[in-house]
Length: 246
Image (cartoon, rainbow, N blue to C red):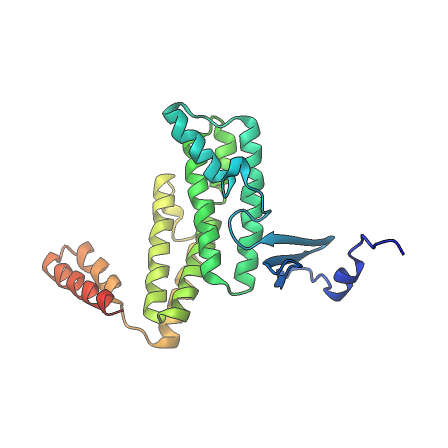
């Protein structure tokens, strides 16, 4: 009997659900763990570390790492070619798919790692791209990646450190959002941005659910904004002592 090459059985056992991110971790034939995502016309299988497709561009862990190595040799003159831009697009998409799978599986620390990769890659292409329109095509997704990163970091902190740490992660993420809006001279749009509102809502919900008073970091930020530098110094000392105990 000829060996079957279709994946009908897999697809029938795992029906596609529109609107859901369906993901699972499974063990491959060689024993390694792989991540699978059910899509409308089949499934995607991804490696759980480094580049999702398992390739090693130029011997590097990811295409971003490879490009960083190239730019290190060429210095400030390094510019991305159209072919390199296309290859970068493919890696951005791969990391997006894996990131939303990690979020669906509540693998929040892994989601943070993949979001950080994408944000660093965005920073890199912004510096080295000669095509402004192509760069902006990625920059428009920076808030979306940052939202995923903040959400995942907060939920990871909630699981491992508690609600105060989770709230601090959200506050840090909100400030990073503010920096992005400031950089693009769009500060007047900050308060009305849907993703920013969702982060404020998440922070308020955590504060209410766990009855959390303003955290040390929030009190420090407030003291600095009010130019209460003596209080700020005391709060910094308290934060250091708290960190040393954990």
